[in-house]
Image (tube, rainbow, N blue to C red; front, side, top):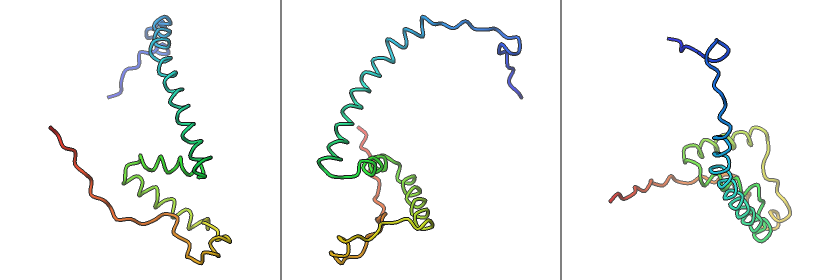
Length: 125
C-alpha cells in the first residue's frame, strides 16, 4: 500500500524550521567534533608526511594500503581480483627498469597470493 504524503505540496502542514535548535546543535555538537577532527586530520597529515618524506614511499599507494588493511577480507579479495583483471586486460603493469635488470630477478606479481588465515574468535567474559 502506498504511503500517504502529507507534505506541503499536497496541502499538508508546513513545519516551521527550528533555527535556534539548529544553531545549538551546530555550536554544541558539531563544532567540537570538527575541532577534534581537525586535530586528527593534522595528526594524520604529519603521519603521511613521515611516510612520504622519511620512508620514501608513494603517499597515494600508502593510503590505498591503509584502506586495504581496514577492508573486510572478502571485499578486499573482490577488489584485488577486479584490479588484477583490469590491469591485465588494459596492459598496465610495472615496467622493468635498470634496477630490475641489474638485479636480474623476475618481476614480482603486483598482488601477491596468500593463504587465508583462520579468523580469531574473541574471548567473552
